[in-house]
Picture 1 (tube, rainbow, N blue to C red):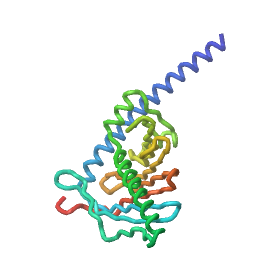
Picture 2 (tube, helix red, strand yellow):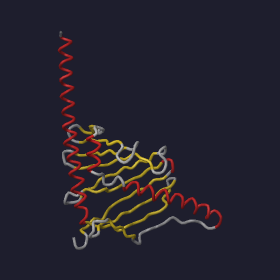
Picture 3 (tube, rainbow, N blue to C red):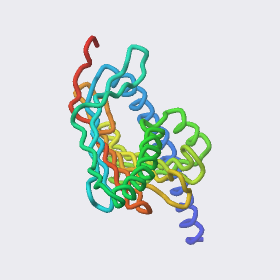
Picture 4 (tube, helix red, strand yellow):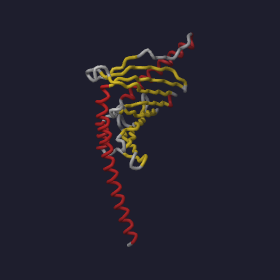
Length: 231
């Protein structure tokens, strides 16, 4: 009899914890969606500098900078600045071989950067669809304060987008993505740290892409935010 009571209590506790977690997850996703939607609009009144640094085999190969702003039609515009330092290529036969490899890697880098943009900022609609399909999971990072929500198949089968949040301050902390660029068997990982502007706007402050199969690392940093002219 005592054993039955214990099992009943455990069953009731499990049901309570499950319903609490579900309610907590729903509330947390609501916060993430609101944050993403609000920031997506607020960011349009700013301009900033985007710095992309590329490393190959641990060696810095190039640094590129763009001035970024949104046009009147709402399209993000990027204009190259003078602070760009491409890697030097030696002359002769060795130089030609290196140039060919550099071109191949350049194509991969362009594809990798374009892939990053398909995840940033995360789409509130896609998050809602994955959650509605019952595929979202939640991990407690700091009880009652910080959580990580995972959204499998965000863009394509086999990928994973995870969002870490500070629930107390109602902020996104980071976004982590596992996906691929041109070969599904070669996984690449994006780690995005979010920054905050005075008006509450959140943005991808630093994005690091690691493609270990290519010995490639790309770091994209957004800085120097200020109100865009006429906005």
